Length: 37
Image (tube, rainbow, N blue to C red; front, side):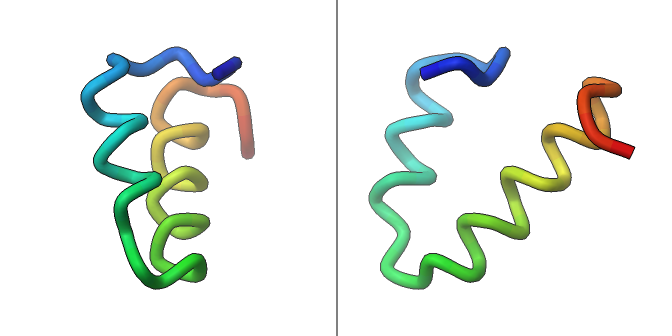
C-alpha cells in the first residue's frame, strides 16, 4: 500500500504465484523511483 505505483500494478503483483518474482519486481520499482539503491 505504501509503494508509489498504480493500484492495478499492485494487484497484478499480488496475483503472481512466485513470491521471489514479486520481490524482484518490487525491487526494480523501488530502484526506478529512487527509494532503493
